[in-house]
Structure formats: C-alpha cells, structure tokens
Length: 129
Image (tube, rainbow, N blue to C red; front, side, top):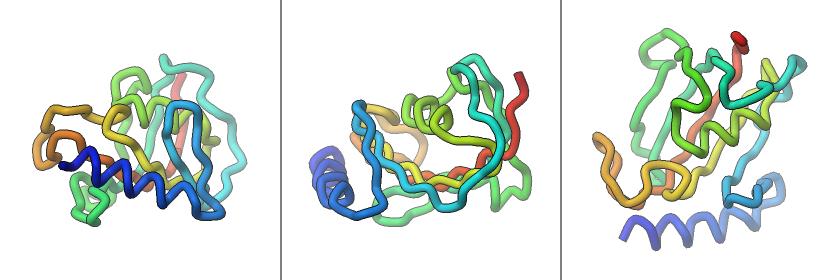
C-alpha cells in the first residue's frame, strides 16, 4: 500500500545528511537560505511558489506551471504545510517530505492516492499578516 511504501521511503530519506526531521515526522531540506522573517502563527497568510509530487516523482500540483504564486492561510492547508512553512523564513526554498498523516491521510485527493507520502518544493515569497 501507499502508506507502507511512504514509511519505507521516509525511513531511508531520514538517513540522508541534510534531511531534518521534526517530532511530528515531517522531514525537510533547506534548498536555498532566506533572509526574511518567519510566519508568526497558522493564522498568517503566505504567498508561495511550489511544486508537489508523489514519491515516484509524479507532479500533483504546481504554482510554477501556472506561473502564479499561491496565497493561502497556513491553517487552511495540509498539516505538513502548516508546520513546514512556519519553520521557513521569507526568501527560503525548502523541500518538504510529508508523511500521509500530515497530508491527506487515508483518503484520496484528486490524483493523490490514499496513504500517500508527498514531496513539496516550497519557496516562501511573502507573509501577509
């Protein structure tokens, strides 16, 4: 199942030198350092560019392909985004490795199968309090 495949992927991914893991199980790598401030809370609205894939690299969504960043309130997205974006500063680009329980859990969402681990490259462009 997707859940077992994702758990095995995350177990191996965790061993990589640059990968950091939070208490919740979210894993991330900072791809580009930023110099701005961090979101203060999940009530903040942020502007981001992102691309999301499954662990087998199928693109599930991309603001880059639309050519327009996404503006969203942190408490209105999947748990992995809410947590991950609060670790970032403006200007930073981070790869988030999101376990299924911090994504869509055991339910399907569009082309995303139940129990899927997801990978998002996210660049925090701005915070609009």
